[in-house]
Image 1 (tube, one colour):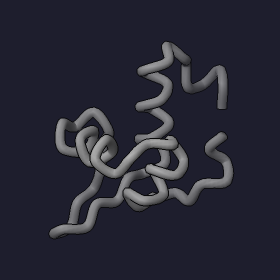
Image 2 (cartoon, helix red, strand yellow; image 1 turned 60 degrees about the vertical axis):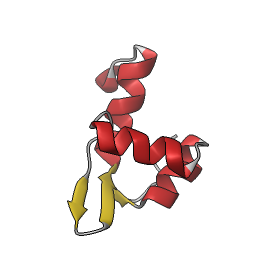
Image 3 (cartoon, helix red, strand yellow; image 1 turned 45 degrees about the vertical axis):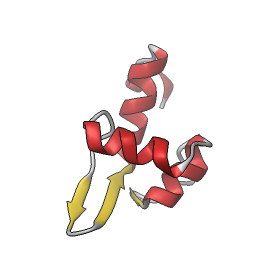
Image 4 (spheres, one colour; image 1 turned 135 degrees about the vertical axis):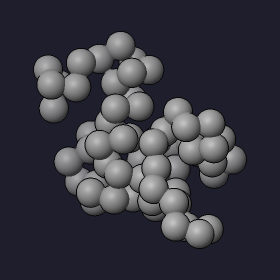
Length: 66
């Protein structure tokens, strides 16, 4: 699922990968549920942070599935 993604993603790329709207993704970023790097107004999401988020919310173990 995540193999084709870049190591660092934009908000738009996360929206596309997760089939979520921008407001939903920005909500996850602002609450810290989805870890991010921010430089000024630019958000960058490490692929590992996205994998961690999905695993935590689906009850999956990262090492056993990837």
